[in-house]
Image (tube, rainbow, N blue to C red):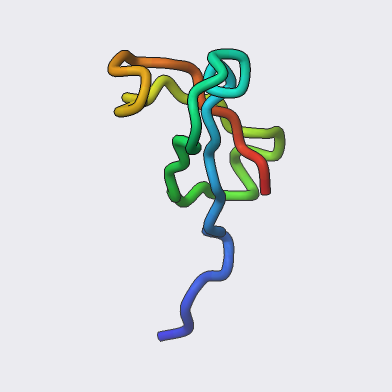
Amino acid sequence: MARSRNRIQVIMECTEHKDSGKPGTSRYITTKNKKNTTDRLELKKFNPILNKVTLHKEIK
């Protein structure tokens, strides 16, 4: 059976981390279906540097 190429890997980066002035970055790697979700993905994920849940946006 042929494998579907609809799912792609995307990198999520924290939006609040740049403004905090702390060193480092908070990034997550996840997958999305590019046919169902054509716009950029936004999810709330845990940022271990800021020690709270923040909004992460797709950068790639």
